[in-house]
Amino acid sequence: MKVYITRIIPQKAINFLKEKGFAVSSYKKDRPIPRKELKKNVRNADALISLLTDKIDSTVIDEMNNCKIIANYAVGYDNIDVKYANSKNILVTNTPGVLTDSTADLAMSLVLACARRLPEAEKFLHKGKYTHWKPDLLLGVELRNKIFGILGAGRIGSATAIRAHAFGCKIVYFSRTKNFELGKKTGAKKTSLNNLLKNSDFVSVHLPSNSETFHLLDKDKLSLLKNSAILINTARGEIIDEKELINILKKGKIKAAGLDVFENELNINQELLNLKNAVLLPHIGSATVNARTSMAMIAAKNVASVLSGKKPLNAV
Image (cartoon, rainbow, N blue to C red; front, side):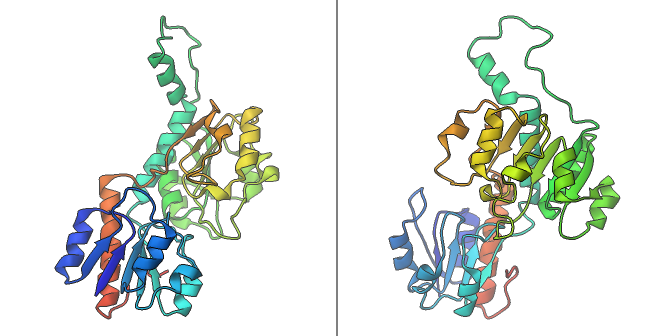
């Protein structure tokens, strides 16, 4: 059976599939696969391992003559038309759990970078501006006793909350369900979205991307934030209305934003790039050796399971 991979992934997963007797091929270039190439290569594939950068819509799925599984190399799967795939008897899987710690670590890295003005300080030093120490040089804010708001208290949101609690923050969260375990570990309180935005010193976004969360943080919601607030997003860019975010950052209506995701990834708004109070990263939330290797192995194991006539490990 043939497995097609839309990009080069950790070799351990490829070796695993080959050891199981599958014929594995992949797109070799270091960029997202062109749609024409994708459609051509999925026609005879029994399984597809895809990336977030691959839009697997109905036109691609219609080319899948033999495919039994689309294993997404990500925890999110908004790049795949899951319902249409299921209607064609194609299972869709993801990689939950294994990137929780890496993404939560990065969320806190963005919090600290914004709070302590780290990118600004580094540029200041590299430009030779550090000629003497002074009491008011690059003053930032501390985390202790600050209110830390979590939007989406799932795996990654909870892991971020636990880290923020260790820094001495008071945790509040907005979620569809009450997270009793998080409450036990951190004293976190469930609250409404409006109250969270009004009262939090830090707001960290950990929601999935869907029709309910698209531009959830729009002009009206963003206007509720404190002038001293720091907004962090390691989830999906389209949850925040980016134009409105740029507007409030320009006007200094919030202190800073730390973003690992963008509304129009890979075409990042130039205005955002020019802002001094925005810390921007190239979607590296899961970019650790452990996380990326584990993601690849989960995708490979899902493929092997389904092509062997068994149930997938992580069906969505």
